[in-house]
Length: 387
Image (cartoon, rainbow, N blue to C red; front, top):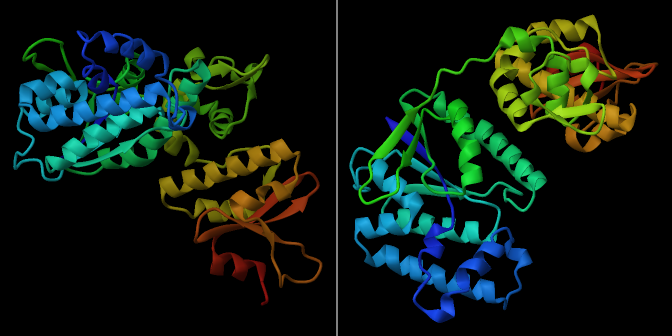
């Protein structure tokens, strides 16, 4: 069995290298603390903080290269968790297929620390990469929320497919990292990880393993809100009146009386969207369906493909809402263009939903009427396109 280990990265590896007995370094910790949320571009090239980070980074690299395992575990909370997971044996023969993801904040200190840990693990023969979600920092509530939202999207695309593979396990190592991030990932891990690991502070503390709880989603209860949830997942705001009865944790105020999908709402939606979007077509603003399109949609046998088609339709609807029905808003995202070679008296347009599938449509009153869905040959054949 191969394991994907996701480790949150803090900055303890840097701050642990400060010589507290050196009077010249007594101000280093508060300076690092006060600049913890700054990005690389926000630190002048000759700034004192950048110089401090450079010195501590060199010390950290040397510490990892020269120290024994226990000293390394004391120096880095993240590596403490990884060594604990492997029972102090990183070179064991039972883990050649394991892969490590290091999750850092979108800050200079976070990315610098992640790179040091990454280089060390690579030197030990492990497979490893790092990821810093855009805006993930604690500079403000909005930035942190945006960063967590980006992290959830990455987990959905990168980690969730791995969990569904046979003989594959996902482990969240939350020994390191900032407490605010750990708190969120503890809950997020119940959806994406098979187990979460911690280590109590102290010499030779044992690994604590928390298995994934059997969380279930109330599909029936959420089904009545699937149109609103899908639109909010695409970035729309919805009147609170249309969401009476929905769990309050799933929505967030966006200016009275509008609400948007909360981080927890997005998390729950990711778990249930395939099931909710793979049934009947949603009634969406600015969209209408011909019977021919409904037939093409019903002919789709894959629940995942059906849900992806509906997700794209929701995005189209959202763009049309924002542009008040102007189809030119679909151009860049969906390559919306006019069909050439259609029979006379027809003005048929089309847009792509992926590289191989497309949807033909026509404007009718204030609606975009969808006509056919399928491959290039299927749609053009039905529309009698002449080149």
